[in-house]
Image (cartoon, rainbow, N blue to C red):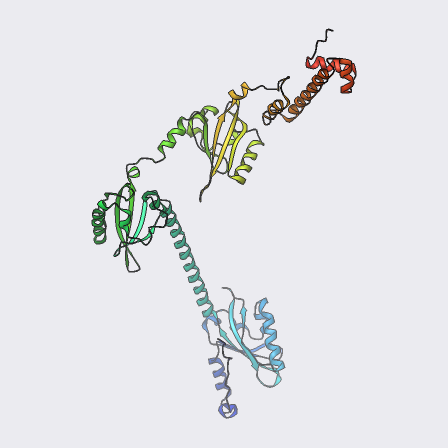
Length: 472
């Protein structure tokens, strides 16, 4: 919708209407029409003034006599004064301009209108005090900021209660009191009742119950509607699960609702649903440790304490994992990169050190456990020192090439690469010499020619690898 342009209606006969006014009457009209009125000469010097606002008078505006008007304003307002005076001289239509004057308590905002006062270049300036509007505007801003802070606190509180509602181990439902239909249900409802998440919203509460428990549950809900709620009762769900049912009523926006809780017997009796898993981890022979994203230990099982020679789980808590696991500056960086990129790590060969410096070879399997607040890492650590002791440290001399190479690759991560390369070179030389001796029917002169070696070099390598009967 277009706004209509502003319209001004001037006096039709100003001379007839105002010709009888005396100078005193004109001065009174000007003073009454403004909070401050200035009479300027052609140089912009204040030659007379009228102040009808107590606030402006207290800010020293009455002391402007014989001062240049442009010198009474702040630096950012000087160009506005120059433009207003230039418009009066050129005869352009005047318009209101807002300028600021410096004062002890801060800038004083005034809205001015300037027009010509006849010959000799005199100018009359009318000003209206904007301090009251500024105070009201400041109060409005403060109220808006207060409302925004209250809204933010409300949103934060709602987020906390929503998180509590979603993460509760017991089933929590909000029912419409008159109809007993489900308005909201947390994820535990689907888990405990054996239904798909969200499928119970809009349905009657009775569909969750075994028919034998509907009557008792109805009596409990009726009692909660008429009072603050009674004692919890035991009910049977449609899937056979036994729970404690409790309910209480609350009002919101002139509507009545019921807050209903279904607590499984295991939780009601204080039984930890993860107790079996905890017991298994405490007895398993593989070490298990949980860390935060900074790899600081949150908890560990007894097998990890045995490997690291720590006395108790409390002693291990909050210690950095790299104090015990992995070769310094190498392994943990690789494991972290794998976990962050893929979320899991399998059978990574590394070492574990006890707090006394003892070192053993281990294999690590790890996984990331995502969480909205604090993700965690779980590490399963298997001691493979006995398995490695049974495997030959170096490849067998007479073994096949594929088997020897496989044995060498198993040394990666446990032996420096330069040692593996040297071992591989010796293996290849030994295999070549054996093949040449077989090809030449143990004729060493012919074998040296085949290999491109001198007889002395061949004899030296035969002695080195213990091949053939050198007593001949």
